[in-house]
Amino acid sequence: MFVHTVERAAKSRQVRACQRCGHMIQPGERYHYLDHWRTPRSFWCSDHRPRPSDMVTSPNKRRLYLAQEGLIDASTTGIENIIPALHLAVIEASAIANHYAEWVWGSKITSEAHSPWLSA
Ligand SMILES: [Zn+2]
Image (cartoon, rainbow, N blue to C red; front, side, top):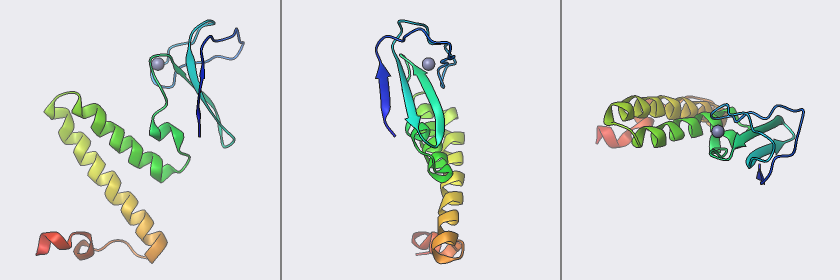
């Protein structure tokens, strides 16, 4: 998926709202959009760009990127925000690891296989 940038928005009947902040993109403004055959065209204002989670169609990859972006966002704020973001990232990563393990191996990751370094 590619990010396209339009330097000056043309007049359009189509409503172009930023996916991040909801800003209505006006004629003459700079904006970005994503175009993919599997998804409707989506827009971002000049202050925002699509993030990795916006650029994947796999729901599992999207969950991983959302968790990662949550960590990045939390790391720019206070420690009290990092704790829940880390907790969520662990839950999401573990759930997706199990999803892939079931797909590849036909079974979930056992706790022994999951953390051999902890039992040493
Ligand atoms: Zn925006």
